[in-house]
Image (tube, rainbow, N blue to C red; front, side, top):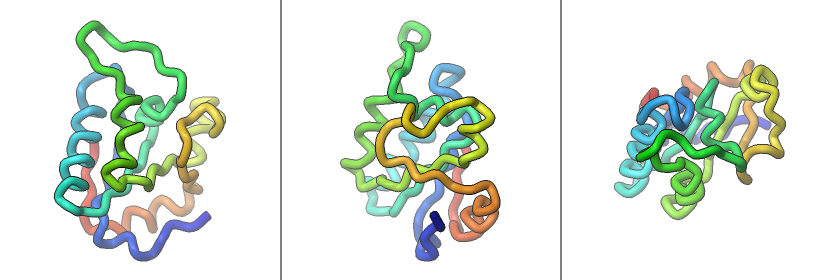
Length: 125
């Protein structure tokens, strides 16, 4: 499945941190929501430990940490419907696509360089 070529005006937010390791994942989601609230098209790419945020079954984090799943579920209300995961990340973490929330687009590893090139603005979290 290819990546749309019209992605250039969209903000690409790359999430690399697990939900409960720090607040970095939440900050990435917040940045995506703020950009979308101002009418900016936003695409999310979950890599490495960031994929953990997309698991349907999530354990709770440390006391005082909010679960990220409600935020993931809210993304669609902000017209953020492009959630991507590299296939090799799932393979490396022994996660099957059906363990993830609905609406995930799997990206082949050979498509990642062009995905990054198609986005003029990229935020890493």
